[in-house]
Image (cartoon, rainbow, N blue to C red):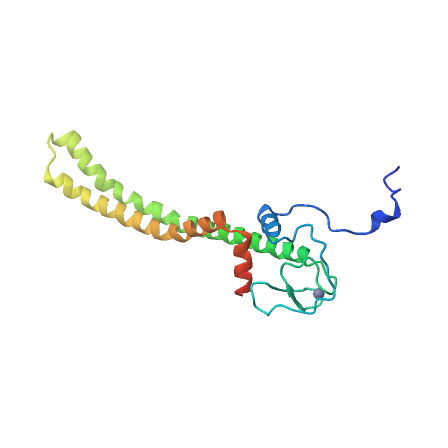
Length: 186
Ligand SMILES: [Zn+2]
């Protein structure tokens, strides 16, 4: 059989069994949506708009149950849900990258600021090495600005990095349920 010589039935389009996201599959598995061909057309109930379980069909604009595979108009809701989830996921990663670039830019001048501490550390060190054998009080006083600069720098660094750490924690821990929750709170 050549590549173009398929039986007629093969042209009937079916949703492909391709996993787009493990998190999504896990959720669908739990919600009993995967492999469900339960496409009852006579169900006249609709979920409340804005509820966690509501999903707006992109085709007919009606509100449908999130866990339904097909809308009552026949639109493939699971595909729409997968698309929306993937877009949301990409958005999260894009935001995190953007934030990380932003923080990196802000940290650059801060790293130069640390250089200010060097003379205050070098002078007492040279003093000990070349001019004096004992550790005088003046040595400690010279170190004080260096300690203050380093302390202020670390404080500022921590302040700048905190939102990035929170974002990283979110990127590491979000689930499909997070998407569902955020989606209904828009
Ligand atoms: Zn529809």
